Image 1: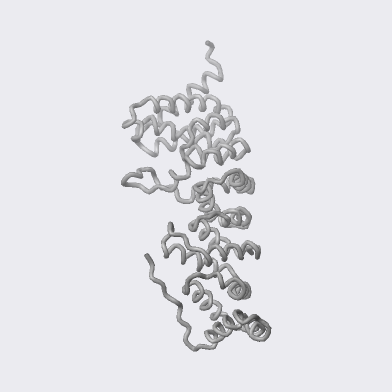
Image 2 (image 1 turned 180 degrees about the vertical axis):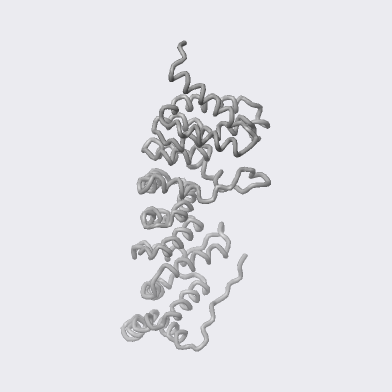
Length: 331
């Protein structure tokens, strides 16, 4: 075969790729920079080399395949190079490196719909890896903030795609992962999907959604907030510790304005099956007495006997010079 421009390019690529197996990080990084400069003309060949090295890595015996090896550094380097070039032609090649974290980030840098679809589809496989800590049974390097960074590369379409994935599933683990990612992203684009997460029957997910929504100063629709108060204050779940359950109750209080807390206590307080939740609500209402007092005084005039008793009790706590938060024994 004639030694033409294409052959010259391949020879240049092969030389640089061989340096990706170097033990010296500086040499590997320089090779990656030089490969990236080659741009789109090199993508197809780099993709074929990536597939070849992935296959060779998979063919290694299990104890060796999981260790850092020259072959794995080549796969890592090629994946990062394809991400840096950011040519959509690389998407099918990078798909073969999933659920590797470098492949996820490389796809995000390309940022097209095909890449986004792959990232969302493989979320249950790659996201847990990104949360691991070094040492023990979790030797993978920590990638704090990777998920937020990945979805930020896709822009608003990234959050929308993850939100659509939640619409199509009832998997609790998927909602847990999504709520963590939305918390990391932490901007107004995540408000609507967080309201969806709030509907999940899982304390950890609810508390994270509530805390993030409060930080974003997002308004939770009143009917949904009332339902959440009903859930947290009218029921108990033996599968959760008292500490976790009280954490949910307090997170809801922080997300609810005083007027709505008073309304809930007056009209649904009869559902409270234990004294602590009622005492907790009354304590927080008493801290904002200037807003609560006009409503409570009206109830004293026009409310039912049960409502008047509740109102009188809260007014007494508002007027008390010493406001002590009720304590609960945690288990």
